[in-house]
Length: 491
View 1 (cartoon, rainbow, N blue to C red):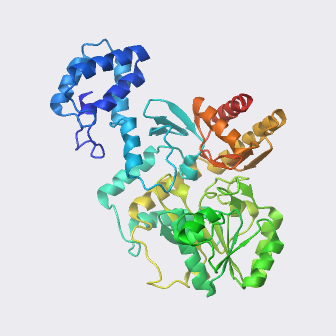
View 2 (view 1 turned 180 degrees about the vertical axis):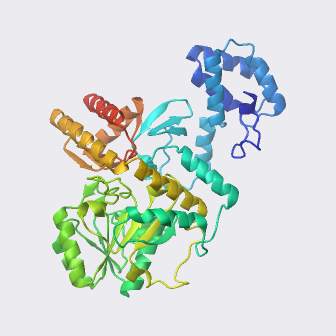
């Protein structure tokens, strides 16, 4: 308890000081309501001079321990109190207030829970309650919410060499390159590492423009490619582009998805030699996959007109969209190889790392000085990527995705028969979307999910979307389907 109250910076340099407000919160989390309130009331009376949100001093900690000794708190409860304090030393209210005060509001804060620990597909909040996570941090934590092997690898790497600029050779990157080729589509083995998906999309556009010596780009309606300047310019939803005066860019043109005639018209009108696409449109389209016919026609058209195709697999890659064992990318499932592919999110196991990957003839269009990245492919990122991709192969992730995808599809088909408000079900690997008639129904189901210990905050209009970790088990899928049945039934 003393270690949980007074931090030892040699052991836990990442922590700040535990506050009295957090101690009171945890006591009420753990103990029965009346007992917890009574103890907190007495502590506040006896330790009234202790500042609520100031780090406890050694003297305050000893006083607090002496006071807690007066109460008959069982060993199991005391262990849970200590555990919650070690996981989080600030109160939930203080954390919330700090975010609201200092965050630039580029997104809406999710304030319903404060996650402090992960275990497989589950996250525990600051109140000690566990939730099954169906978001995977936008498909970044496909291997789960905590990873001891990645933690150990990052610890080892940080002790030896924590950073190195992109243009200097390094051991961690060599280790990754020695193993990754077996997972990549044929010929896509030339990497330019980045730190975020949008950043990698920006660089893919630069590489394509350098190679084709052309400016115009064809993107698709309802496509989403990120928030950086170039990535948002090729994202269809105007509300993302207009605030930055990117809604009338002369070099960006939008075609209809799954419509080859629309693509032909755009190419004829603009003379463009660059196309960027998601093969499964996620955020803005409700996990909408391309048809096989459209992909075949698009690749044929690209060869005919010498057009470069950029395949954005930041969210779809590394097994997320597998339809058969061994399909690591959506393009594998469609039987095509793009000219340039953007990969990201999950291949760091949750650690920030992305990349642009291309072919030999395209990579040489980039020359020294054309671009640069201080942190791209740094030793920490490469260590995480090596361990995560190795785990994906060892755990046979693509087979699990195939099995759990069928389980979801079968279960959701039954719910669609049972409930009129389930208008459509889309299941492509573990990119899942369910049309619930209107956005209000989506919000109600998400709220009822939370009450049942499931977190799903992804939605697109009237679609609720699931991107569960690719390690999700059969039992956990059954748990989701049962909870969804109950949530819809209660509407």
